[in-house]
Length: 238
Image (tube, rainbow, N blue to C red; front, side, top):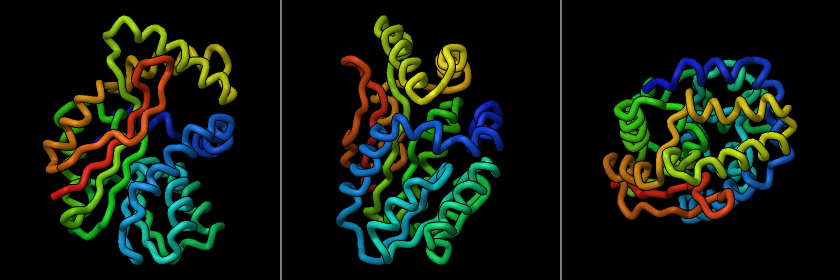
């Protein structure tokens, strides 16, 4: 599995250095998602193993590690600058001994079936080829123990629908709230159209089911107006 080259290029050193601060102003969206992830994983074992795919700057590792002192984590990230920020954050929070960080892709890891949960938060939309995207879901599922959770959240919606124009305007507003210039906010919409594969929620559910997921559930949706925006899905595997 490989994300688009453009996506990897976007997460360069400049982006990595400013990433957390840039999105601080819209952190309630991510805080909501992280809280619901914690609820979904509340029944995992005391010494659970968690894999974070596209771990970025490591936000979910820190959140979950602080809430569950005996959990261990493996973070996988194709952007070296983002992984460096993650490594520093993990170290500052005293979590180095509980975290293994891998520069690469989930497909680079052995399919060990050793994890109680795999998290993939705001990543899969960057895999623009449908077959490669399905393979990514399959690779993540193979990392799980029987009955483990695969939690995926991504930008989702029907870009061909008449409502997408309204969604695009709210998307630009969100980026302006995060501190983007008007030009950068406009470019964020262009990125959705040109370098990201935004698909309807039903397609995401299909990827999960095809990878062996059972009881696929939508447990989080950040919405613009009355249209779907960023659904999170929880699916036990096996």
